[in-house]
Image (tube, rainbow, N blue to C red; front, side, top):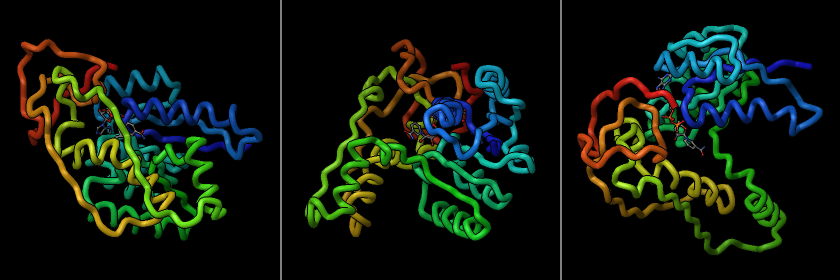
Length: 258
Ligand SMILES: NC(=O)c1ccc[n+]([C@@H]2O[C@H](COP(=O)([O-])OP(=O)(O)OC[C@H]3O[C@@H](n4cnc5c(N)ncnc54)[C@H](O)[C@@H]3O)[C@@H](O)[C@H]2O)c1
């Protein structure tokens, strides 16, 4: 069976999810079109990269994503880093002839997103496939809704209302990760979880003409966490811990083990 050699960039929360996806794909979809092989994992934190190699069964680890981009053996690159590096890594991988599965949101601004789409369109002419990871399109209810829309069963769509609620960041002792910092995350909760429902709205009802938005930062300071990987509210830092503003623009320290 054909092998699909995988390079993973960013071995945090979603890196883990992509590995589960690659590992399960041939078990769930058979006969499989290809067998994913976990070739190289990259994380800027060398401890995270080494752990991920052992834990997920990659053949190699690295701290430089260009090792993946320049490896002629690698067929597909999963981009699972914080949002500010999606464009740079995805464009390099596409230009090197790799298929790319990039996490959402595609990037932090329209200029980078445009450059990514241009690179993806150029690569497509050479048979390269790329995708942004909006996995909720595959939720059975959304698949059924899309079928009804495409078949015309529900007629003209007059109104679509979407919501995505998560509560972990409502805890003021949930640590200050990259996700709360504009420089890395871009658009806060809107870009983080809002982007999923914006995608579903477009997928079902077509392009959006106009946008109105209210934005507010409810928790303005959070306890400083050791490291850059997002702990996703799974760890509370002592309320007496040093606090820092949510929208700071400074490099994060080394990532913690997860
Ligand atoms: N599709 C979804 O439902 C979903 C859910 C959560 C997160 N995400 C997206 O996945 C991406 C990653 O989020 P996460 O929750 O996994 O974050 P995370 O903090 O858990 O993991 C990010 C990892 O990337 C590493 N990293 C940072 N810059 C790097 C670089 N230049 N090269 C290599 N490694 C680098 C960090 O050290 C960290 O280990 C984000 O874009 C986020 O929006 C998507």
